[in-house]
Length: 115
Length: 114
Image 1 (cartoon, chains in turn purple, green):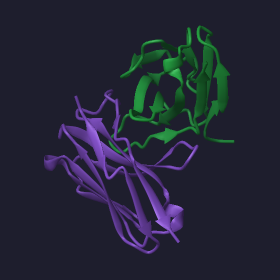
Image 2: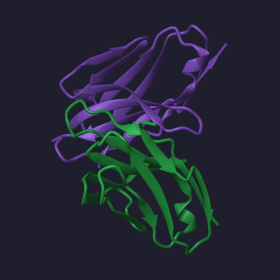
Image 3: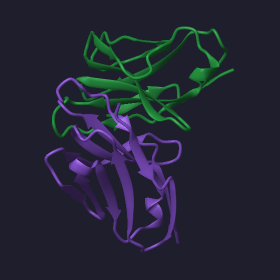
Image 4: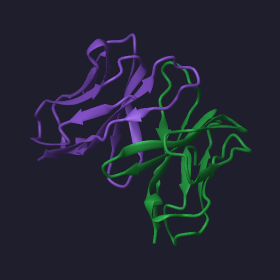
């Protein structure tokens, strides 16, 4: 059974700092991995999706990397801002794709960026 | 408005009652999903649907029923609510099961079973 772990559970940084969030998974046979952001009381917003054959994806100040063989992904946030404060979750989709859409989520990292 | 809408936003009910949570999307996405989010467990898939009249169980389907008579609607019914079903429920959709398809979430329904 796939297990997804996110460390640390919470992170507090000063504004302007570059930071890395970690996601590890036990079964390397994945189809893709997504990083989501969740604001308090809201749903999840997909930030980046990395396909199993890709090494990284970038969107603005965000960069996500994937090392499938070691079962790890990182989300790098450059020049953090108070508006980046949220919970960040990663989710993996099982290998084989097609109709197998049962994502496994990590429990998230709560990020606080202090002004 | 375009998007994925969940109703109600908040619901309080009693044990043993039947409760239906609604989910409506305006994109005609083929895939729709129901998740529950609990402290200590994270997000867990309850049911999903690949198209109208096609549904399948997720990780925690017991005590829940779904239907999908129309592409845009995917209601979730708790047949006889229990306190363990107190949770935040999220509906999500995806256009296809393709390689690069992202999941789009609704804002959630906070359900309390007393």
